[in-house]
Length: 253
Image (tube, rainbow, N blue to C red):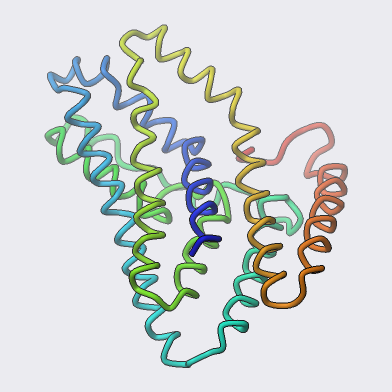
C-alpha cells in the first residue's frame, strides 16, 4: 500500500488538467456560485464529499476484486511482481512509449446540472464522478495502476484506503478556485495551472517508474530498480525525440 499511495496522489493531481477538471475550476468558484445564489464553501464541501465517495466506490470495487484474488492464495512475491509489470506498462503509456495518446475516455460531466439542480446535487454528483477516476477524462494511465495495486493488496481495508486517498485529492482540487472572486482572478488561477501542467504530467509518469522500480527490487532483485529507472529515462528521451509530430506535444499534454 505504501507504494500505491504516492501513485494515487499524483494520478489524482494529474486529473486536474483534464478538460473536465479545468471546467470544474471555472464552473464552481466563489464568483459563479454567488451568481447562482449559492455559497462556494457549501458547494465545495459537497464536491469534496462526492469526491471521497467516488474514491471509496472505486476502492470498494477493487476490494471485491482483491478478495477474489486472495482466494487464489498467490505468493506475495508473485503479486508484487505483477504490480511491477503493471507499473512498467502504465509508466510506458504516460512516457509516450506505447503509442497510446492521453487523455483516455474523453467524457465530461453534464454541465446542464448547474442549471437544473441544487448546489448539493451537482456538487456531490460532479465530485463523485471525478473521484471515481474512470467516469471522466483519464489524463494518466496511473489511474489504472492505482486500481491494479489496490486489487493486488488483496486487503479490503488497504484497497479502500487507496481509493479514499485518490478521491480525497481529486475532490480537494475544487479549492484551487477559492480565490476566483472575479474574472481576472479566475484567469490567474488558470495561468498558474497552465504553468504547472508539464510538471504535473512528468511527476505522474515518474512516480509510476518509481513504483515499478520499488516493486521490481522487492520481487526480483535490488538491481532491478536501477535497471528500470535507467531504461525508463533512456526510453523517454528516445520517445520524446521521435514524438508524434516533430516539435509538437502529444494530444492531452
